[in-house]
Image (cartoon, rainbow over all chains, first blue to last red; front, side, top):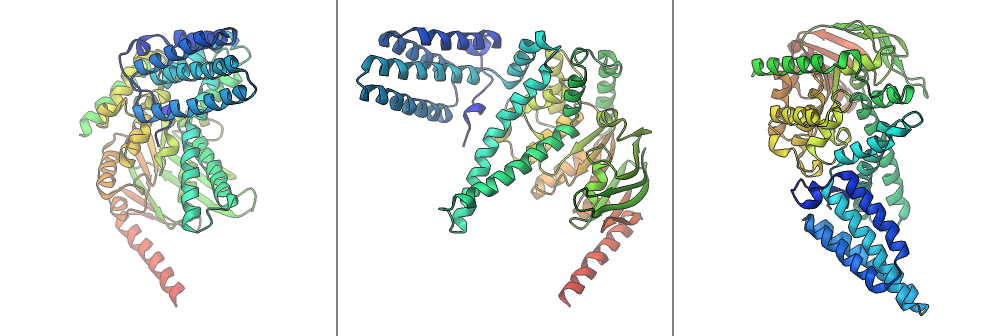
Length: 239
Length: 234
């Protein structure tokens, strides 16, 4: 299964070329705008425009199609409730609003790399650096997004294991191994972050958010470049 | 130089001693560590970059105490896990290497260049924009290694880095690790790989059972394992 969050591909479409801040601002603005637009025709127009924008990012078709289908299903369900109450115009408006926002969010995620999103989150939170470790918050988003497909995978494996044991009807046989393996994965992830020094960086930032952006004495560009070039030269010699 | 001085690890909950008091000085460039599952190999090597802290005694790397100067030590000691999946966080290969560089390379363009160079060095240049989820197990391990090497450590600790790989990738990753211009401490079940080290340490039931020439170490390890198997079946 290809998760929706893995839809980003490095292409050169107009959406890919647009800066991340512009795309996120556009998404926020449209999300607010649809709340005020209550004309069903205009709402449907916005939904169609969002869908076209999503198509313009040339996302991988399988996950994109699945995401669109799920969105439409929920939109129809939301509209159905309003139709049942006799609110036809409101039903169309609600369904179109939902589709507009989700399609646009998909277009943004399909055209923006995680690195760019991290940079944007860090930059956006920079004014609050006195109170909030902005790099750490960005990293938390990345970890959250990393964990979602992993949980989907673990759930699938647990379901298969339950089927193999003939206990596929027991929720406990699926949920308990999923939960324990998710905790295990989170512990492994934590150890890996620690080993890569990423958690040290976060801890340093939390200790002193104001100074966290400043390179340390041993991290000034000149010495860093020298170290890297020396390492590359050594690698070259050994080949 | 890595120095263990009476380093002991006791499980905080159960009080079971995982690593008996251990004193070692590791100066050789290629050191392999072998032993049965649960013998304490991983605990020993995790002490080197402060992933685990000794209950008593000390561990120092280039004179820096791994508890008091953990951050400095980890900047110099790269760690490679058995399963690279938990080590890879970002959606694409280049982004994951760039994550390692975020703290040390503030400028994005420099970060992109350094990440691409690190991938190119390991033969993953054409995978820079490929989703991590679509890489093979061997490619993921190489990517994890690229993320480690990007920050130019002088020591790499590899905890069974080839255990999950097929024969082809096992040979490739093993050869690559051995060719690196760094000190390599490798925990392994691959006895051929252990024999290629300059020094081999056998860990058995939380203790150093042997420390010396790889040939002798592997012979002792075989005796330990097969002797125990014979006892078990008797």
